[in-house]
Image 1 (cartoon, helix red, strand yellow):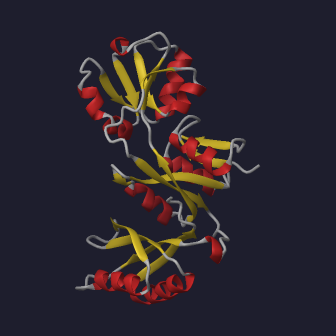
Image 2 (cartoon, helix red, strand yellow):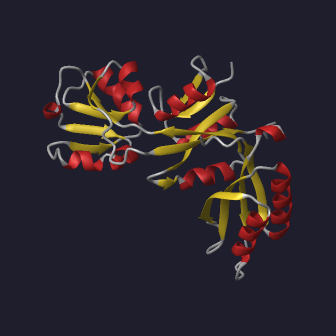
Image 3 (tube, one colour):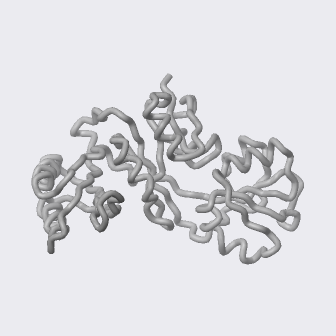
Length: 274
């Protein structure tokens, strides 16, 4: 079977998405950075890859937009995952026994309020939530805890000291499914699109594009600007739109392609939001 690339290792949120999206027995390529994840696709080590693109608390993961664009990757689908942060360590320990907590910077940020009540604990940034859990288990590290999904505790035989420690309980991350080849999603299986374009510095140029989107009955669900490093003060725009009728989207796409520069369709796929 073709491998699916994930950022992180088994027990991470990317792993949970892989299980929910593809099923339990899919082979994985575990990548410890998004650059390695993209390389897994480009070298055909993975057929598809799962990449976090935005979070309801932290917002857009801007470097990932640049990676998708720079390497001409295609979005074939998306998945929204509710994020749950749990404090876990070796068994037979209490919160008072924990002196250090390691986790991904985003996980630490999202649990800041909890740790304000436990000032004896030192927070240390690490590359991946599940990787910390695995290291604690493998090296039998006492007094050290990880913030990770519950599945990490199950996989690496750790005990959950405190569950649901995230500050904001309604926290979700959007993940996109990527591949190097253009997906063959049929018209009946697409009601969302991700587009990229550039605009000249003219008054009302962005407003004109937004009017086209509105006039063609599309719903703008996301807009993100990204500076062009090689051209100071010029920006690329990444937008997500949903639509009820493909013919409306097709019309809007044709008009925007004429009005904008460097127009690119990043993906046409089924809306994953429930």
